[in-house]
Image (tube, rainbow, N blue to C red):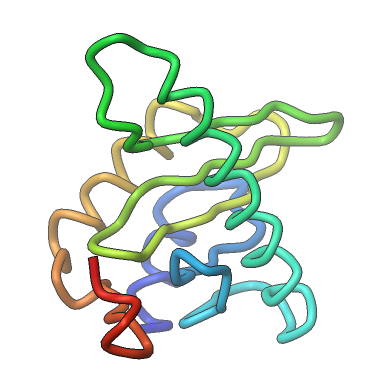
Length: 128
């Protein structure tokens, strides 16, 4: 899986880190970050996903799902995209990244490998 993440990084200049995470914040694959940094990014992404779901619930016709979250911070950008059932793709990028290109390449990756990104529930009682 890591080579697919590397392909995203190579095709979008200024990409810093890429993490594929489960909905509960566990790092399943990463590129460009050490294990500790990838785990921190995965945990933070899970929290942001939960906050975004709370905001989504405020829209009258929303099912509470989150497709993408984008944050601009001093020094760069953070992207979080729903990847498949119970998984998300998180990317950090430096200032000057082409936001449109990043969004499109993330979407392409998610579509291309779709169900391979899914994170099955860890126990039968956690199934939807």
